[in-house]
Length: 201
Image 1 (cartoon, helix red, strand yellow):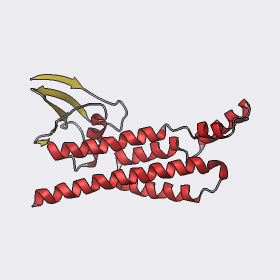
Image 2 (cartoon, helix red, strand yellow; image 1 turned 180 degrees about the vertical axis):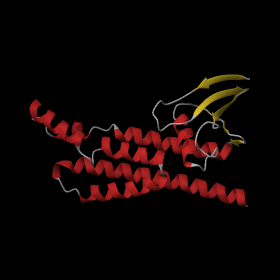
Image 3 (cartoon, helix red, strand yellow; image 1 turned 60 degrees about the vertical axis):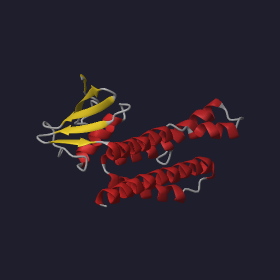
Image 4 (spheres, helix red, strand yellow; image 1 turned 30 degrees about the horizontal axis):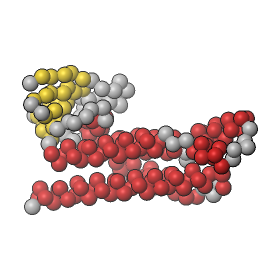
């Protein structure tokens, strides 16, 4: 068995230090939980947040072990759930880099460089632009899923109230992304409920 020590993310919000262990064709992420404030289980928000951020950096992890004073191992369905959660994080990253002014420029090819720069600046500062909306949702999603739904509904309400004609294409695209995101979240919730009933039965 070979081991590779890894410590990911330097920002203060991340508390997980972990290593990868390789055994045959299996990869296990082992988190050192003894020196942090987490509970050593994935139902603890701090632990889930740290492991999710580690998962975003790793590929093909088969098992997760939270090594507290008692070790807790997660396999199969739990790993699939983590992968589905990471997929949503990746979707949020992709949604956040959409540049709405590109489409606006295509629709208005006669705009001068000065007006283009002004419009670009306006779009990038817009609180309802994809660069603000989806980064904020990602932060809430990783930090607190309940806070995520509250922020999601808050942003959706503001977007639906926006009637600026110049913003209609961007607003429409953002609403479509939000609907897609909601469906992904519903699929994740359905998976968790389905597997939970399987375990009970």
